[in-house]
Length: 222
Ligand code: DC
Image (cartoon, rainbow, N blue to C red; front, side):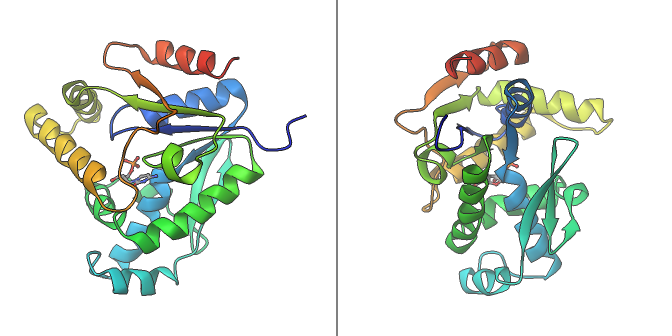
């Protein structure tokens, strides 16, 4: 019997396929999937609704005291509750995505969410995805993966997703947005996106989803 919960940390840039892969690995291995990006998005939604200037560290810290973020699982899916309200339907808009990359640079927000994430990992066997899980939130995770893909491959995947939804978009613009977001995530002062020393790099540029899942399950020794 292990005396602690089993934790897999999966980090990497936007669009590398972390959530698809983490969700599938969770199902296969009987773990809970914790999507930490959704928590940053929920705090961002709260700040947008409150009309807070998200670049103002003092205002953000003060307002965030009134934001209670918790999660619950329904049919294996993570539901984010913001002051008791299920906010999942509002987390994926362009405005929230763009603003979250600024809000996630705020130290007070990172500290608040880190505590919640560590509590979840203590309580459950889980695979947690984000940007700083292996380096900062769960430095003692059992397995650490750094999942990446070239910016062109990531842009093409996003382009296919948007076109399938009937939205018109421009591949080059998407690639530029992805590169800008990578730059911000990798160069921020607090918990920048970096590969932990003991993380295994998995480049998914030329891999199918099934191959990536297989590789991770194998790395977990299952
Ligand atoms: O994974 P995602 O696209 O839902 O993440 C949304 C934003 O939140 C993205 O700009 C990076 C940030 N984020 C973070 O800084 N740390 C995490 N652990 C998860 C997400």
